[in-house]
Amino acid sequence: MKKSDYAIVVSCTPGYGFGMVSTMAAQNHFGTDADWEIAYDYYTDVQREYITSVFPRNVNWTSVKSLIDEYVVDRRTDNSSPLDRMWLSYWLLAHKLLKEKKYKAVCVIQADEFVFVNLDNYFKMAEAGFLVCSEYPFNFYKANELPFGDDKGVYDRATASIFDAINFIGQEHTQLPLDIVNLQCEDSFNGESNHSVIALNRAVCRHGKKDKILSLEGRLWVCDSIWASTKLYTVNDKVYNSLAIQLYGWHCRWWQEGRVAAELNSYKKEDESNPEVMFMRENCEHNYIFTRDFMERFNEMIPEIKSLYYFKGPIREELNAITA
Image (cartoon, rainbow, N blue to C red; front, side, top):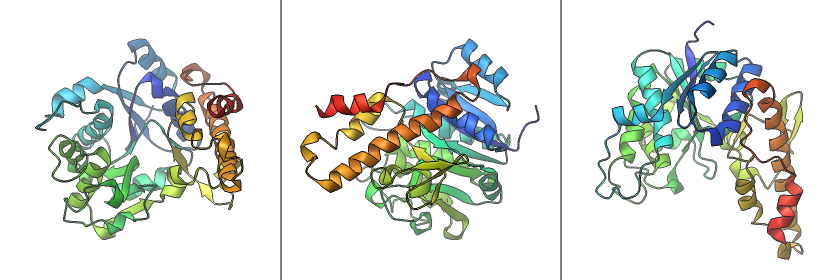
């Protein structure tokens, strides 16, 4: 199997396997030229070897523990709350791969960011020196509006421009992912400045430039903020919103019962007299069913490696249970 110049980097446990396997199959289906580099925890040798042998592109595995042991020094004065090893490990693996010059560019993605378009052009832009970053979906700031050169200019999520769902990084920015980790391992100087999302924005302020950064629009790539305002549909493997605008991915564990229940809990039966709330509830219910069905097609696409870690039951029963 020919090695690619590019890699998709993710950290994953079997509990997130449905999201990762669905995206792996989707990227293979849409022809993205990229290997897969996985920082793993709790996957057995047998599970890893099987995925590697069955998946039609290169898959390489690095243990989360080895990355943490090699790179992480917790310098926080109060470290009673443990650092999130999975959130750190995909940045650590990206840094390691770029530093070793194994790839010309990498796409750092979360296991619950499902992407269903070809990514080749974004890799090429990162190879050419651009940072290609997903927007923070709940703000309206563009990535090129960050205070470049001032890594303390962003210290809370209210002013964050970039989200950690999917980002493309090339050889010019090898240090950036390691800085994202190190900023989380020091005391906060203000507010939540060592939060993972803020650390990402601060590191981009250090290493990025206004004319060398590209935003992946949050409403098209991450979609969390539009879930109640539109209904999704598909035509020939392409996903569109109610305005016939194509989407490229979405973020979060919409396949899991508890995650969906928490969202639907916002729309209880006592709100039935409010047409606007009911409109939003109907959209959410439709979209949760849609996303599960769409992702399941890709989960099943390579049956030998499909993940069974998800809730299959009808969402209607789930909705009735939490709004009774």
